[in-house]
Length: 362
DNA sequence: TCTGGGGTCCTAGGACCC
DNA sequence: TCTGGGGTCCTAGGACCC
Image 1: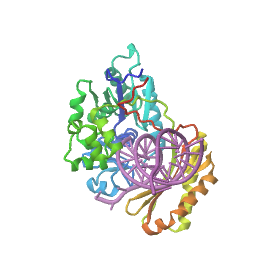
Image 2 (image 1 turned 60 degrees about the vertical axis):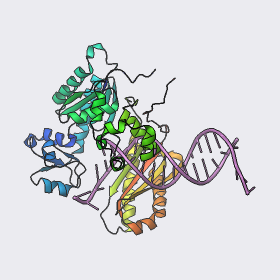
Image 3 (image 1 turned 45 degrees about the horizontal axis):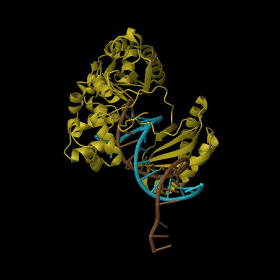
């Protein structure tokens, strides 16, 4: 029987300003300085840079306006991959169950770590110290009974902190959060909630499911209701199989000649096919994603009878999808093009979210 | 304030089948 | 003219995350 109630045994570990911290670690001259990684768009901003209002995802031009003296570090992918590998080596040593959430972030379940490991707090303290010593990076850890609480705890404890939210504290902890801060509520849902005069999680928690469904629609309404109630039964799942391979590229504004477009497409398909070959993956559904001048997006897909990782059939399918979308492209102006292969062989067919209340496993 | 590159999950509707 | 109940697969789009 799966038990999700009881003690706070889920850890969320997240390296602070990962890309910027790696740059500072590798060049001590940068310590204490505002550091930005990424040129066109800010991939990471050191906490010194954040004091100027710089945030990741922000345009590079605006970031430089906010802080002209910021150091722009060039991304060095190998250093990030190495740092990530070292980070996860420590995590796997300290916890029996680790779920990777990105290059620099993970959930850990220490419920079965054994008595010698100590309390979840002890493990979190050790984790932070060992990552600092062995990888040279600051990592913040949140501890809670659910993934949601652990995630929100690490966010609250940043930078370079640790916060344990015990089961009797979690209600008050969540209630105080603004709706847009909750993990799983993005700009679209936050806006709808704000229009109803709802601004805190505590206010959401007082509403019944039907009310939230009326405001947000069935799926999102139920989801937000569960989140606000902290009814989160999602287990920490190691080794979740990948579900798609993709590559995309943004284009300069203005006319794109069909020849250039096809060249870009070939490059993207090559990248995807190469990565799939490297891991032995194959998929049946080919996706073409397009983004236009006004930032609207569309996706077109085609499903093949057999899974493939070969360049030729993927390219043929994407060319066909692109040809079908040509009228739209000529009208709207293209700013981004992406190719993905999904429906991977052996990856199952989805429906993973176990945020369920009603689920009564046997 | 105009926004990169990589992903995930969910839902609705239509086609098709028994 | 009215028209059951169940299921799967595919496509398109929306929303969210790092």
